[in-house]
Length: 194
Image 1: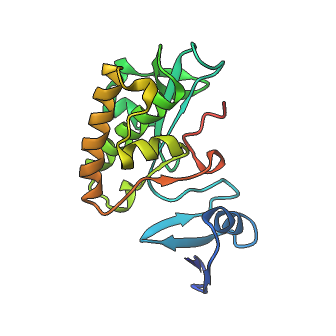
Image 2: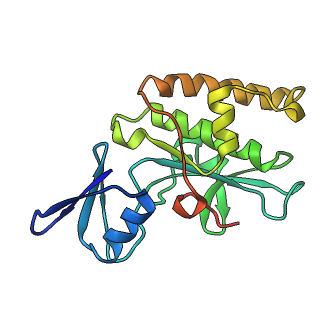
């Protein structure tokens, strides 16, 4: 449920629709309105797509297995969060995005790393609303919440090390009464469109 408010007149209305529909409303018929949910403010800006306040992550492996995996973590406006977290020397550019690049891992492993880093960044934020983590990877969310090690990684020490770190960060993150939320790639500002 979203409460949308006209920024000029103060007129409000309640909308019980998914965020994608509310976002579309405030970009078209309700341009200039503000939507509120769980304390997060989202304001439409001249037709630009808007997203709830939070941290978004994605991974891409253009060309499929055997090719480098690219990992992106950003805020709701698409601003990079990895450079400050990992350091400038650990990130590069891919299709105009700031990304971490790694060879020899699957795209799902990249999704796990992105989610782990998103948790770490969220755990260090003072703004509670900005702590919400979003990903378009149901697999990474399942690994984070259920702690299951997929059979193909049971002997991969690097994967298990990162999965354990993800669980540690996720436990800290849960202290904020939050769980990572699944969104579609179309609703993910971190999506690299690959």
